[in-house]
Amino acid sequence: MTAPADVEARLTAPGAPFEIVEEMVLGAPLRVFRSRLPSLRALLETSAAHAANEYLVADDGRRITYGENLRNVAAVAAALRERYGVGPGDRVAILAANCPEWIVTFWATVSLGAIAVGLNGWWTGDEILYGLADCQPKVLVADGKRLARLEGKDPGVPVVAIETGFARLWNHDRTAPLPSNAVAEDDPALILYTSGTTGRPKGALQSHRNIIAMVGLHSFSAARGMMLAPAPPPGLAPAGPPCILVTNPLFHVSGLHSAAITCLANGIRSVWNVGRFDPVRAMQIIERERVTGWGAMNTVVWRMMRHPEFGKYDLSSLRNIGNGGAPTPPELQRQVREHFPAIGLGLGHGYGSTESTALATIINGEEWQQHPESVGQPLPTVDIEIRDPEGLPLAEGEEGEVCIRSPLVMLRYWNRPAETAETIAPGRWLRTGDIGRMSGGRLYLASRKRDLILRGAENVYPVEIENRLAEHAGIEEVAVVGVKHEELGQEVKAIVVVDGDPTPDELAQHVAARLAYFKVPAHWELRREPLPRNATGKILKHVLTDGAVNPFVEE
Image (cartoon, rainbow, N blue to C red; front, side, top):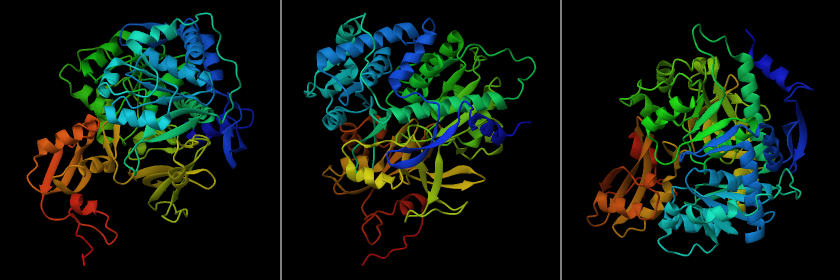
């Protein structure tokens, strides 16, 4: 049997497709793939090779080929430039459910050398206005459902409503060529928002280099997987043409990077789910479209397997399920292999973040069966160190902060120089805030950003909820924590010290009026005694959640 290390060495050797060289990138020496495209527009142009093949199958039944997508992108790019003055460095905000208009606007924006901004489609009106004020786009492309959340408030920028106004962009000039202005590798291309310790979302600014590097690593992983794949079991029908079911949102790296962009880079057909996940609809799509791959969060896999109609549909075409976000419990891995026998070793997990352009490690196949609690080895061009609070590297097996250096590390946070300096250390090392250890060359995560709550596909940052609850007159103190939930991974719990008699329903409505629904606590603990704190005033959440003894005595 060929060893994975031998396969990787062959693929990355001098003259090989994934040859690695060292180059200076933004002042730091980084390992990069020698053979790479210079920009996302150049990547888009390569899709002409698949012009007759389907690129997007939309939830409303539309089927768009690669050739049609190129024409659509060129027309929308011309409209953005000529109607709204969009040029290099300008922002175009997108706020919508998964749809072809979202994807076309993204490609049109980056082709102009402008910056696409994927606003979180689950934000409330207040959060939407915050995001627009932060990125200051030339234009907002949005659907009616999300515009309605503004409740008539002026977004402060021109708006293209997808249902009523996008056709004018689509049909602006059907003969327009793609833009031809120069775009450099390290030019900014995309802003995706991720919450942080300030309690307000931060815009992670990614470059063309970042996203092209991500595409390269996906291609490397696919090539390595093909070279290591064992012979299929007897009687298993050959896999059909690649087709990906997408149930993750485009404002996440899981939907945009791992699906829309990666599929285009490889000429793969993608089928898009819109709205709340419905297990029956997803199974119908897999059967009808002969889906071969699915990038799914743990919670939706649980829901499908436990649905009473599971087994009613032909899901035998499905050969790969990839997962990201929260680590996949070994028991869930076992059940997936049991429920989807055609998958075999085609089960994988990727670890990364928005700040690392979706990737740092991937684990799948026999390696994951042998090391089910790991998130894998660093991918080529990715360096990982475990560091102590002073930033010094720790020995193998010791737990500390996971730090990443690679061409995938974002440029910076948008308009956040202080937070950027805290997050990107000298030498362009990304401080993830995640706690983990290295063992046998593999990464094992202990926690994600310490207090971070992983609710299904969403990262929930307690401080944002705590800040909103602190605005309520009946609350003196508050701590928000995660509690285990079988399907979602975690749910949100609020522990509050009350003044008066507010009810959980009242407090939940208070949060719901200010934040997206998934941030509203599902569990409440109302108390009168003060929360435990250390000498600097920090609430000791482990005392609240784990029953630990408070080691501090308040003076």
